[in-house]
Image 1 (tube, rainbow, N blue to C red):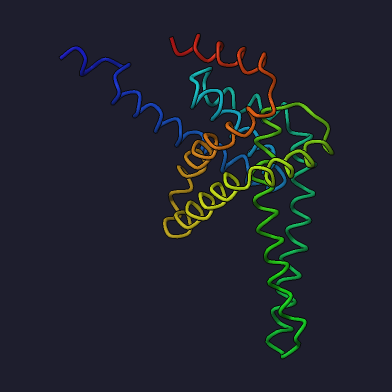
Image 2 (tube, rainbow, N blue to C red; image 1 turned 180 degrees about the vertical axis):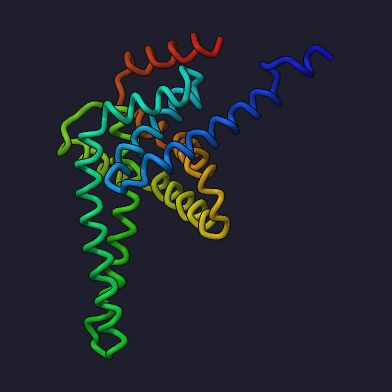
Length: 217
């Protein structure tokens, strides 16, 4: 009977994680509303998932806002570049579709720009987690994230599939936006961390693993 009400049993731990996922998703959504802050919010979400939700280090809200403020400048600069690129690609696609409907053979090039837009989204799926996990120059971050996405293509495609599935869930069930961001990021985390650890020194990996064990014990 005592185990039933033990806050450390599987049921209460699972319930606590669910509440944390909802809380993280809510603050992510509301901190992203100004649009230009989405980059900082994506970075903070990954950081809070990695440190608190996955490894039980600190409180999710506190870690989220600390990472949001710490990485705001760099994340926002990169996000604004991504936003401009996305708008240009989307605009090209729409223009070319109109040209195709008008019978212009050049209009079929919209497929090419559609592929570029998908590749950009896959690149973005590495960018902000990279900022959350490593310190580097803006140019190096953008370059390294692209290399990682290309050199780890199977995991990149899996992350793309997760993005598609959860995007469809939000489209079909809009209220799920207050849960999906954290759940998607948590699942993505298990894939990305296997990639990131390839580029970490053995000393850094050992130190991080030891720190995580201390908090979980």
